[in-house]
Length: 85
Image: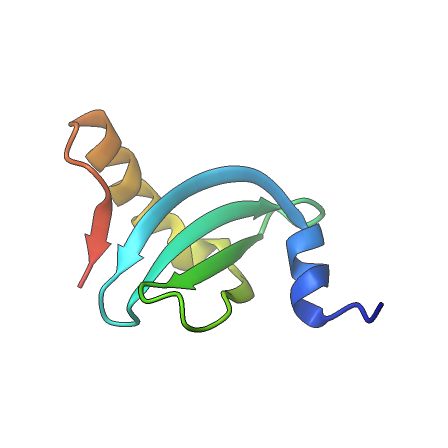
């Protein structure tokens, strides 16, 4: 069995941090802590139409702090899932 870059990134997933919808990219995105580097997150973007494989990325956590706060605000105020348009 061949190990792909996506497999390695999924193997680096830590604690689940939240989910949001990215309307621009047409994906539902899950955000996870990176298990060895707290400055990073692992994102898994699943296309709305499910005709393509998920997009798995290692990204800077600072780039997602605003999104994580908006996810938390939506949950706190029972507004459903945060939608990035």
